[in-house]
Structures are given as C-alpha cells and as structure tokens.
Image (cartoon, rainbow, N blue to C red; front, top):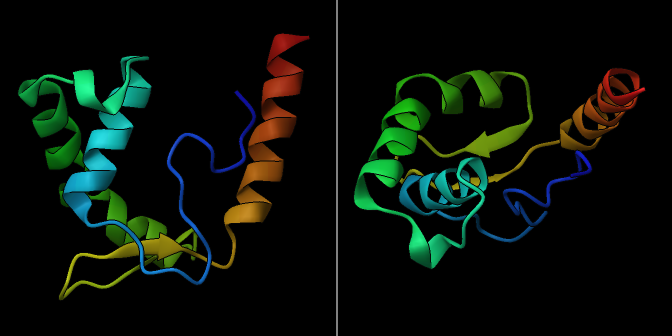
Length: 95
C-alpha cells in the first residue's frame, strides 16, 4: 500500500471524522477487513490507542489537525511530506 492517506482518508479542507470513525478505519486497515466487518474489540483497541497518545503527537507534528474539544480529526499540513518519507522507506525495505 502506498503511503498516501488511502488507509485512513483525511480529506483536506473538509471537516474530518471523529475519533470513533478513525478508530474503525484503523482497525479495519490493521486487520485487512472492511470497516463493517470489524469486531467491537478490534475497534476498541484502536480507539484506546488513538486517544491515549496518537492525536496529540500527530497534531503537534502537523500530520493531522485535531480539535480536542469536538474530537474531529482532519488532514494536517505535513501529511504529504510524511507520505513521501514512508513511500521511500517502503521502497528501501522491499528491495
């Protein structure tokens, strides 16, 4: 999978999904299944990880824009730079 934001779709300029929706998408991606097929335990695990550390760190790195009050998550200003870096790492690791 390319490191664009295809695993978790964060559309620029559009209000983002809340943490629960992002957790569902992450769980589905981690388990390589459709969102509608994830078990509640899979979503809960992703949700807990997401809330405990990821949003604040990703917001600080400008990978996402996270509204702490509403929980909305959107595309950050450095997500494209991160995608390029991840693509480069994937190319090196798969060579």
